[in-house]
Amino acid sequence: MPMHSGTVLLVDDDAAVRSALKFSLEVEGYGVRIYERAKALLAEKSLPTKACLVVDLRMPAMDGLELIEALRARGVGLPAILIVSEPVSAELRSRSSRVSVDRILEKPLSDSALLESIRRALVDLA
Figure 1 (cartoon, rainbow, N blue to C red):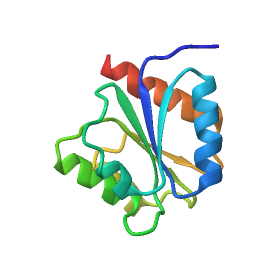
Figure 2: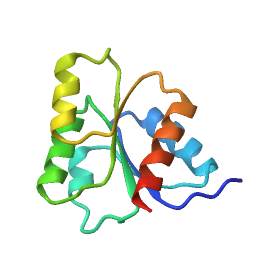
Figure 3: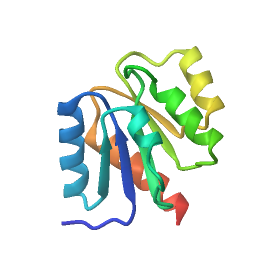
Figure 4: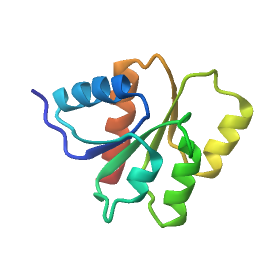
């Protein structure tokens, strides 16, 4: 089993997506913390320094970009990957750029695209 250093902070309101991604990422050797809602991640007292955010765009109460913006306002500069279920528009790219999203991936997710994005994000932190 491959071992990677770093933690993935996964925020998605869909239990099946959380479970499947957690399993795949753990098989690859990543530590994974899962959150059902944006507010759950915002409630964390401390976050790992070698971590990558994987955040769903469409969630109740606070969407993924609002979450990333709130984290940035707190000084959290962790790399962020946004997962979306709709085609990526110019407006979405613009909003994502303003909050320093590293990559936008469309569902259905390709395991290789997600893993490569996470690997690159965590290598850049080393």
